[in-house]
Image 1 (cartoon, rainbow, N blue to C red):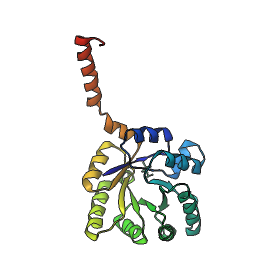
Image 2: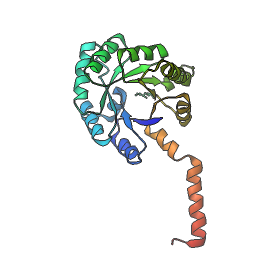
Image 3: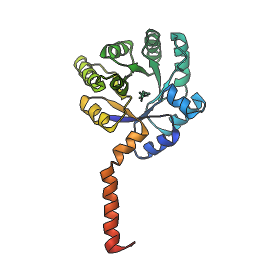
Image 4: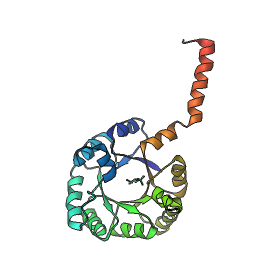
Length: 218
Ligand code: E4P
């Protein structure tokens, strides 16, 4: 399973990229709005940091196929690594079909069922984003969707890649890897919890104390 980072914060992206752990980035309108910066400028800056797929979503307020295609073309023009994120709607599916036929990769977002993912794949989407945490939020098991869709795509030989999104904790990450997700897109805070669980931090402190007790600061 590959890792993408799920953020529009360039400092977090630089840190994760420097650690060599991420293969791409996903953003969404909420994440970019949180940065309080120009929408397209943020995407451009991210594309200059990470050499891998960068998902930039059409603006949340654009809901018709034509508008999404126009915005998608503008996002794709930023950099060859840009992937256009399109919401799972009827108009979104039309936009995915057109953009993919133009050679522009798409990531169909806001997917909550295997049927939605199958439709997105049929329309030609390169990626589908399954919102694991938001399914958990309504008292259902988000991971079941990742497992089910992995099996469906595997049995049917579907090439569309599965992105496990809306990851809320480190257990989600392990579960997604076990369930067969191609990619987990993970917030920076959770990536750092994966790097340094408390036992590793405590182990480092103990080694330092034991070392200093005998060797001092040499
Ligand atoms: C992924 O593509 C989405 O942008 C993101 O993972 C949504 O996460 P949330 O449900 O924590 O907002």
